[in-house]
Length: 263
Image (tube, rainbow, N blue to C red; front, top):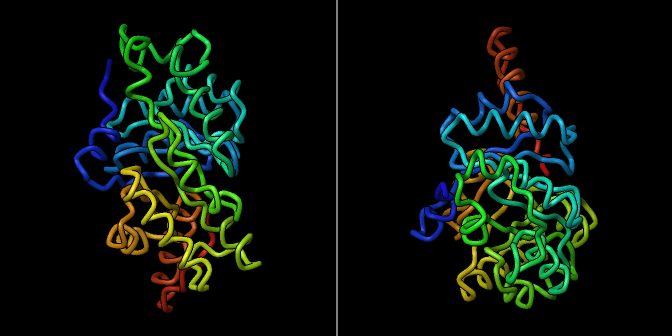
């Protein structure tokens, strides 16, 4: 089976820089996949992407060096299994707030006896290789998103889930629930404490700590803080930023400040 280079990098304590796609286009997926990202995530939750578009995007990513990942809409075993069958080499699952939810998520990503994933790997065989069924439990990446007070309170139990590779902070939702305002770069004391808690717990449990960022500079700061899996904005944010900067330069204006929205 094709080695999951993201898991290999994480096992060697090398930070992973992850691209993020919200625009439903195989062409843009192919472009992003060739830019040097370790992985690229197809976003079914907040991206404008249905299954048919996701399939073409995963096919496009398969022709690039980037490892294809998917963020599913929710903790729905049927969708998780379908995206794995379509060739995703890892799943990011939103709104995991309890250990039971984490166990259900991981079970959907693992064949028996480690889980209850239904057999029918389809594109998994094409991308992963003929021996995919024998090694998929080892190679598929599982990241649970921490986005609620409940998730923070249950963080240690979530990280104790067998087969869970780590957690991924959804900063807007976590900031919203902790402070009342969605902000991917919040400096509110509760948000700062939550970030520190995730880093410390992941380090103690030897699990991956990931987070969505608004820029490359923000991603570099997060790596310095101890995060091993960072996403420096998504395609929508990067496209808008590049357009604003080009327009400003063409008109001889100051480059506008970057917004702090994110997923």
